[in-house]
Amino acid sequence: MTGPKHSCGVVGMSCSDDVAASIFRALRMIQHRGQESAGISVFNGSRVVTAKGTGLVHDAIKPDDIKALGGKCGIGHVRYPSGSAKAEKNAEPIEVEIMHGVIAMAHNGAITNYMELKKKYLDLGWSFMTDSDSELISKIIGKYLTQNNEPVKAIRSMMAEVEGAYALTILYNNRVFGVRDPYGFKPLCLGRLTDGHMLASESVSLDIFRGDIIRDVAPGEIMEITADGFKSYPSQTPCQKAHCMFEWVYFARPDSMIDGIEVYDVRRNVGKILAEEWPAEVDLVMPVPDSGRAHALGFSVGSKIQYEEGFMKNRFVERTFILPDQKQREASVVMKMNPIRSTVNGKKILIVDDSIVRGTTLLKLIKMLRDAGAKEVHVRIGCPPVIAPCYYGVDMKSRDQFIATRYTLDEIREQIGADSLGYISLEGLVRAIGIPESDLCLACVNSKYPTSIPGETHRFQSKLQDKYQ
Image (cartoon, rainbow, N blue to C red; front, side, top):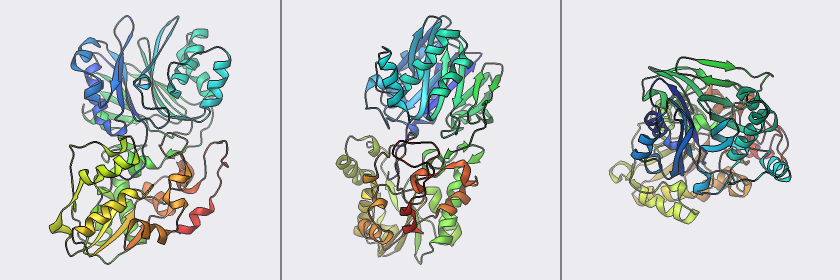
């Protein structure tokens, strides 16, 4: 509802039986990672074939498509367009045909040197059918495959050229690979199924098959899976981790495991720490559903204040973050959320959400609660103020869109109409996740970028953060 938007989820499978229907089910388990388009590519015994389209997984891929996609290895993708424009041509997997066969690729992330590389290859006479950085990655891999037909070498050569965030699943003829960038920005896990092996952005895709998590793909690692096993090609250079903290705060499903840590536990920890850092005298704690639910429960446990569901969510309207403009998104909030009057009337309420970007949605929700009779509305937020753009695949591109870059804490409180407002501290967030700060990407909340970004200072400590401590 109010959080930042992110791009994409990927799946890869190699099994002893046909995989298309299973990839379809796995993609539905990570549908929350992208609703703009979906696709599946499989090797049908002679070549790579693909079915993809716009919309949710069940709209983009029809039953007849699944029947036609007979094959024992394949990959899948769900997409939210954080960079390239919304268009069917940008749906993934992306296919590239070379002399040795076809490569299909699914990508989660964003390439920071995309424009530089694209210009380089346009100058060399290459043509591009999409405006997606995924096509560029695919074609660079294809270039090296044409030279040596050794996929691991080709992928490593691509990784030497490409900068930024990427978790990839790659189908090259009858071989399936998973790749994670050297910083590990985006998640990718390896699992065992009853009849094969699987790669996925989140472990919930394994759960639907009662599969077992083997481990997370390491930063900079290339992983090949088969029906019988897997082979690791570790990074050849030491990698400084920079896992995206928003995966635990907001993006991933609460029942997922990301880099060995359960997302639900992190969110409960966030709520408990918020209760320590920002206590309040209120009658009840309630979430902004669905993303604030575990945070609010943690706050309730930590504060010993009663937890209640104060909003009823209408699940049969458009997803607000895929509507084409801000006015439509704001109007949709009223259709999607309705306060439960008997819960909020006459009460002092504390609501918990994962993040604030613009603040417009919270403004409307708080007004709805006051109209329903709430005496006071206090707000607690599960990540520090968002103050800097993300260049790694989250749809937060400009400082102008962040309310925290324009106003102080008290001014933000006034803007959204709350009686009090508190964000978790950076130290509190790191403690809740349980990973050293040096292994996290926190650039959007502290302006310290793990990689070199044109126009930004590497690991620069923004003075803006000081206003909220």
